[in-house]
Amino acid sequence: MNTPERKVGDLLRAYGEGLEMTTQDINRLEQELEQKQAKEHGERQEARARRRGRIFQGAVAACAVTGVVLAVLALRGDPVPPNVPADAPALTRADLAGIWSYDSWLWTFHTDGTLTQTQAPYDPDTHYSGEASAFGPAPGGFVEHQGTGATACDITWAATILPEGRLRATPTKESGAGCEPSSPVDPGAPSETLEFTRVSPVSVAGANLALLWPTVAPKPVRNLASVHGTWLLRGTDTILSIDDAGLYAVRTFGALYQPEIGRASVPGAGSLVFTPRDHPACAARYETVTSRNSTMDAKVATGSCKWLGSATTDTWIRIN
Amino acid sequence: MATGAIHMGSSEWQGTREQVLTGLFRSHCVELVRLAYCLLGDRERAEEAVQDVYLSLFRHWPPRDERSALAYLRSGVINRCRSDQRRIYSARRGEPLLKISALGAQAGADAATDVLARDEASRLAEHVRSLPRRQREVITCRYYLQLSERETAELLEIGIGSVKRHAHRGLAALQARLEESR
Image (tube, rainbow over all chains, first blue to last red; front, side, top):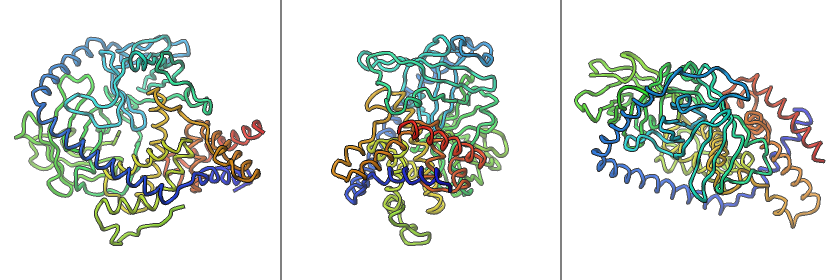
C-alpha cells in the first residue's frame, strides 16, 4: 500500500470509527431489530387473512389486468427507439411499458401511466406492491409525478432506451412543493445515471441479465424462506414471485394470459410444488431444486402435470 | 473490527434462527453500521440499513456458515445503501439525501489537533460519498474494510481489473479534492 492509499485508509477508518457505538447502542439496535421482526411477522399474518377474504376481488382485478394487456398490445409499436442523443425525443408510455430491473428494484411502467417501484415480491391481490406514482412523456425523456398537493414533486428524467433493452435515466429537474432541496454535500449524486434492464417484455439485455445477488454454494431448497423473492427465468421474460406466505405468481408483462397465481410448497428437501389457484389438481412439481441464493435450478419431476418454464431443467435468476 | 465471533459447529450456530441471528448481530453490527455510515453519512439511516439487511438474512435463512453470512451482510449493506440513496432521492421526502457530518460539532470538547484530524476525516468521507457509485464502493471496500482486490471483486461481483481501475480513479479524484479543499 502506498502513501496516498494509507492516508485514505487511515482517514476513512478514523471517520467510521469516530461513530461511537456503545453497548447501550448495540442493545437498543438489537431490541429494535426484534421489534421489526415481530412486526413483519404480524404483517404477514394479517396479509394472509386479508388475502383469504379477497379471492373474489382478485378475480375482478384479474379481469382488469386482461384489459391492461389488451391496451399494451394496442399501444406498443416498435419495441424500442434507436439510441438517442441529448436532444432526444420524449419517451412515450408505449416506449417505457414493461418491467425494468435496477439493483434490487423493479420499476413497472404500466400503459395506463402508473409507475410502481418495489423491492418486494409481486402481490397477487393488488397486482403490484410498493410505491405508486404516475409518469408521462417529457422532452428528452419522461417525467415522474409523485405525491399530491403539499407533497407533490415532479421529477424530470433525461432518458434513452438502448436497442438491447436498457434504459439510461438521469434525473435533471425537480419541481413542486414536496421536492426536497438538493443536498449540499453530494452534488454529484442526484445526477447519477441509473441503468435499468428490461426484463419483461423480453429484451437481449434482460435475457442475459447479470447476477445481482451474492452467490453461495448450491444447496437443496429446504423451506419457503430460501425461495422467497422474485425470479426471472433465464433467457426469457417469465417472472416468478414467491412471497413469504407461500403465495406465488407467474407473469409476463403484456402477455395474453393473466398471471398464474397459487400456492408454493416445499414438501421435502429439494422439492418444490406450485399448485395453481384455478386448477389445484394440476400442480407443477420440481425435484432436485437447488439454490445458490442468486440463482435457483429446478428439474421438472417425472409425472408432473405441468411446468412453469421448460419441460426439463430451469434456471431462475433472483431479481429481488 | 468484529467484537466477537460465533464458530461453525458451535451450539450457537446450531441453535434456533433467532439465537444465531442474535450472535451474528452482536458480532458484526458495529462494523456494519460504521460501513453504512461511511456510505450514507447519517447514523440513523446507517442503523436502519443494517437492521434491514439482518431482516433480509433472516428471511433468506440459513447462510452456509458465518463467513458466507458476513459476505451476505456486507454485500447487503452496500446494496441497501445504494438503494437507500436512490429511494430517498426518489421519494423526495424526509431528510436530505446526505447530511453534513456532525463530527465537527461532536468534537467540541476535544483537543484542537483532534478536531483538525476529525475534520480532515470528515471531509475525506464526504469526498468519498461524492465519487461515482463504483469508485465509492471500491474505495470503501479496499480502504475502510481493508479487503484485498480479490475480496473486493468477489463482494462487489466485478472483475479484479475493474477494482484496480475504480480504485485508481477514485484515489486520484480524492487526492485532487483534498488538495483543492486545503
